[in-house]
Picture 1: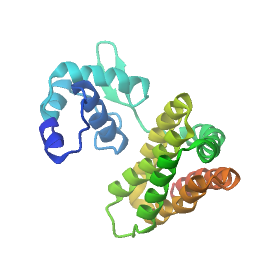
Picture 2: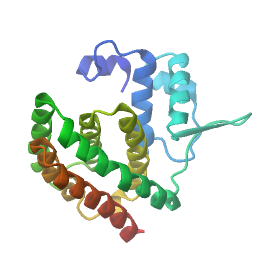
Picture 3: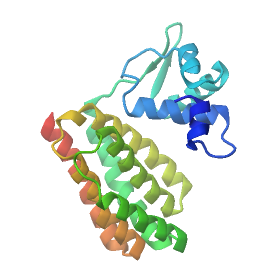
Picture 4: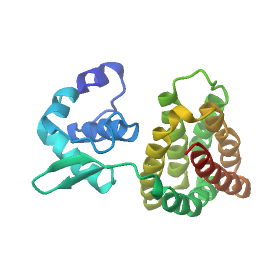
Length: 223
């Protein structure tokens, strides 16, 4: 999708800079493996695809390098990072510690408007069925996590968790065609969202830990 198409569809928010737009679109392509792991990055080609100049793309790539989604080698260029399954345990260890904390803080700290958003998201995902597009389902899954991180009210915690959720999602996308019921996995968030919206911190924390552990188990089952 080019910038012009995004603006026409209403997808782009007001005041979005070209660099931010490029960052968001390239991040999505890297997470969803539309840019394959290990693939070389051609900034000119990407600029043309997105309908922006090369400078915004280069700025976006610098940010994506700190996200561990691309890597630059001197005299070789920039590449999409590989998806290393052996990193699953390390990523899961961090998420098992921090995701439950974020859910607890969200249940404790969310304001009335955020609780309404959480309930609306719970209602949305409760209707998901297994016939849906898998990439779309993965984006819905990510949107649930990001909403909870935001509700926690700690920007530093949010930044860390978004980064590791992105890395976990790349692993998920690597085996997405071998997962039996992705919609069921996403629907599992319904109870979690309701617990956060209700201010039930203990349940939110417990369900989150269970969810992160089941994610790792599901990946290992198909490997």
